[in-house]
Length: 108
Image (cartoon, rainbow, N blue to C red; front, side):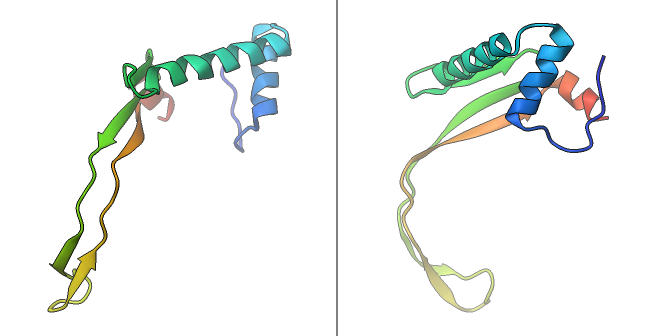
């Protein structure tokens, strides 16, 4: 049965709530959460699948952003008529989390 929480739970409170709801020992719940964390990490590391799906809840995606070169003399959007220089940015990996149908339904 779902409960209403008026404030975000801490990690300890989440573990206690799951342990109470499932009647599983808190240390076993903690082990499951740690295992889930390592499974997600295994999906998102460089060279891995790059996608982790928790069926019905969420999808975690890694997006590889290529490096962008420095640009000079770019029109300044905040001060029309002036130009500005834009610094180069190195390549990066970004994590995107998308809500799936059941999670969207939970939010109302």
